[in-house]
Image (cartoon, rainbow over all chains, first blue to last red; front, side, top):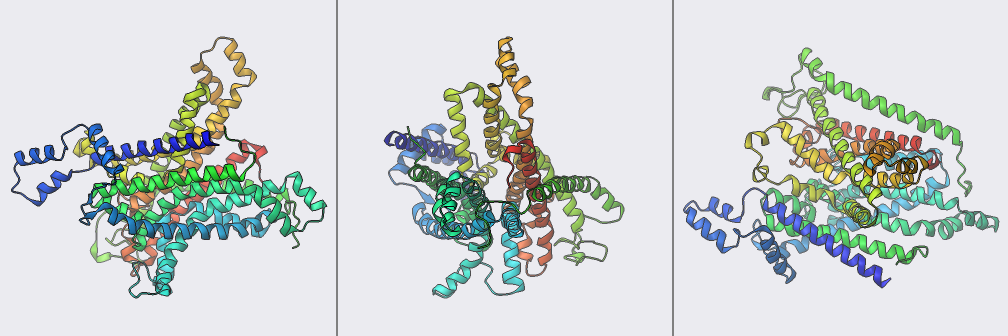
Length: 315
Length: 303
């Protein structure tokens, strides 16, 4: 176990390092650099000033050398400033991270809470009308473009019915106002995350129900609820954890779109704004934090999977 | 509860028949769509519908009067835009899926044949790429200045460049599924007698991979490519919606929705058609891919 844990930790750290370097190199290839942007703001700068400024900030040094310097500073907690917000990146990032965590976390929990009963229902009656309807729901959730789903939600609930706000921040304090503003983004993201989870719950349960131990339990007189909850579902659990972790990456992608459409002040929208507004330092840190969070969630799921499933032996 | 605990389908044969019906229906739909986007725009022009010139006196007209689906915010015919956008979106979907499948096949074959450290490295890479948050990374990649990579400016401005760039971007993340399937197929085919016979006859590994193993993997590769078309169409639409994919005036189903949000209050129907086109296309690809997977591997048939 310790060996496995160590290997996976090193692997994850290495992946994050590779992504960090790739992002750093990509940001370097984006239009303009900090000094060019300064030049736009102040036409009195001469080309000698530009060269001096670039040398001062080390922009004339090779990419790898700059990356190592950036990494050393980042590891000591010095993540630099945001150009758009004129604030330290950490201060901009932290509230946004919490907002996205709330959005993605709630959606993931709701998706599981919906997928479990629906998946169980479908798996108990394969081929029935209910099963087909549930399958169709999963298929649509797989195939629908995220931004269009968000737009449809606005058309239906904000434009036509006028029940809920089309996005933004609540103007008055209080839990109810917050819930009204969170309803559409959370519902959209939940539906986006539902497809794969629902399909897996149904398939995993169907497979588990075919095991001989289920027949044994049945023969011993166990009822349907007991068999599903105590015998079949626990068999599907370890894989479900892995599937859920894989969803985190997808949900962060979904959050970028949902937050942008609904003006939810989270990480996804921040990443998009930073890229569009040439705030490269902010974009770099935000994307890196998001990627690291997703990879760590997967690492956690792998460890949990190993703990939950006694058949998995770790070498 | 009236349902039996053991999964006995209402009628397995009926279920199989129903699913067999879906594959041709999806295929016919996709074929019809391809024909419509290929021949639709010239046909529409012949009927006098205009999808290109801006006419501010005919903004946001309702369906009917000389425009079957109405006009968009710049007075262009929505049906023509939809068909022309379909050309771009479907072309990107097909090209992106084919490129992703080619990369995945090459890596899968390499992993299956090389075994050992190379195999482990490629498989870990597929795991990591599958877990990554795709969209934030695509947004970063799409924001790269092509000028800094030495692409001439007049090329950057062309629509062909947009298509090429987005195809390369989606292929960069689309290969893992194919790679996994091809590797698994390679491992099982490598043990087959005809492959061992070819090896005994002195065939080189490259020849065995390309002439003996690859043809046997046509099934899984087709399945993965079909499913990938839907995913690429989705990816293109999101990036174009965000303004980082296909740039106007070239229409794509994604960028037709870029301004839909500001117009939702005046013309809610405007947002309907492009999204519906994406949804139906992706669903058809997914259904077809599922049916093909079932046909290629009857043992995996689900009740």
